[in-house]
Image (tube, rainbow over all chains, first blue to last red; front, side, top):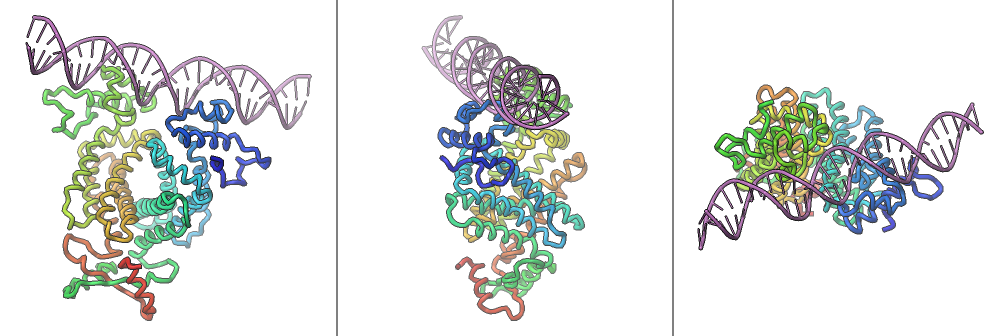
Length: 245
Length: 245
DNA sequence: GATGCTGATGACACTCAGTACCCTGAAGTA
DNA sequence: TACTTCAGGGTACTGAGTGTCATCAGCATC
């Protein structure tokens, strides 16, 4: 119960050097202690501020809602993501760029596995928190989509492509992230996310020019046919795979 | 202001033949009238029940929350979608199937354009409703993903693929749907959605097995390598494609 | 027609999240 | 010292959502 709190993102303004935790951090710690003890819905804001020893009004000064205290670091992560996307050069593959942006979220989770896993279990149980999480994920997705929309502005399908790719990237990232969280935060989270993101990137870059990518593999695609498959069918499928139709 | 209400889904149990609207419909109509007049947040549940001439407690008997009254038909549409997916035959392309499932949502919107457009404008303005909509969309996405996960169970990447494809399908559908709603519900919504869904399908059926239609192909997979690719790399990729690693 | 059951509705009270408003005290500044 | 500023405390209020009980209409049964 001592590893909770907004740890893992020091050197920010919400941390003073004297070791004494900020009121914000104290509130997060108190809230999580109670949430884990008796559940989210069974804990009132009054309980939290009583444990933290502060006034009720102060809680809402730091967190706009009771749900916000469960996701204390997303606001910063979202800002980091925006900044990261703004700072990129224009000759980089946009899809690779949003994949890297998604990795920022993973990094935030991985910085404090215990906290992340506790939060994951809590969120899984409580509908209200699940819904709140949706709105957080949605904001990440909007950020990625806005970036892609700009980068794809010259394409006729730019708008649709931006939407779909950002949704796919977020889904892939979250799929790998949740799998890591389900495992209790054991092992390396990065590998799974890399794989998942690469999976999406491949689907959305193969169809035009093969373009980017590390340079290994990618060059090899596999054909397996049943015996006696008519040759025209093989040819047709090769052609449609290559996008020549 | 008279075209609001849960219209467009008659022949359901919430409609009695005597022409007198159900209490549920009366509540939806009263709520929308007030929401459009003075806004969602400026309207209390007390206002709604007063206008509808019913008791306050009755509101919450029909709608679990104030937000629910804005999306009175999604519950049924979700049930339709589940039923549709359950009733399909197993030799149909899963991705085509979920695309068709997504079209059920479009159909619901298109059944009552005026209502849909009013709701769209309302939802766009009110953060609370936007968040609620996210959870509705999420449930559709979960339904599609659960179906795909089952259908992709034999693939090594089945889980990830199910997540990513359902996210992409939902994103494409919503992109086209919103574009239609922004236009004020003019013209044909179907064409745009068809195009968007086809866009996604193409990206996700070319990449592995060409598969495509019902029973054709499926047997043909394509290998293309660069000249002079080392044989070990070809073998490795064949193995990993087959999931033998 | 009286009795009893049931399901829909209304009435009332309560909890709790979130907000508006104002007070206090500490720190800094002229 | 007087003034300002600002973080925080205290109180009262609004409004969503819930639990509980009373009421009443419809309907069957005796």
